[in-house]
Image (cartoon, rainbow, N blue to C red; front, side):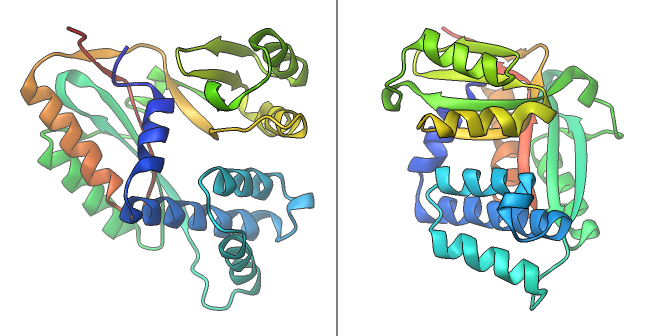
Length: 245
């Protein structure tokens, strides 16, 4: 199906211009700061920080940038305290959208997120209005072109490490875990030298809404484009697909 291949979205973002790369680095930088605040600066003793560092490296963030972010958060020198907040709402044809943010100003973030929905003719809902339509899962994506391991061997490696599901797409492998098993599975794959395209705890839609008209596609793309440009927005999850011709 078109419209919900996270692997395709990941590849597209990594191939984008420097401005888009800067946005990804901003997002990861905030995650590093929060992870250090919560569990300390030593990745050996901080599982969340290890996960964020792995994410940073898969997005080609330079090691010195990662280290600077850790030191800044650990030293509290000029660092900012970020709060997490989540917004839920609706796009065209009742599509469900979840927006996860890290912000130092909740009023600013709320206004900017609401503006994105409004300009795409969507609406913000109450907490919990769409999250029940998603399952929280650890999601690990592997580029087939960069994986030498046989699919069956990769599946057994993932399942033995604690994964609950393994699927093969045209251009990628997808591994799903319970959130608590995510780090162990990711680290088991890395120990075997498996290159990971993307790894994060995601909200996976239970069902998808098909968008058919040009107007619907314009609206959903407007919402997502404005949210993507917002520094406070960390991740956006949605349940739409495009009708295939």
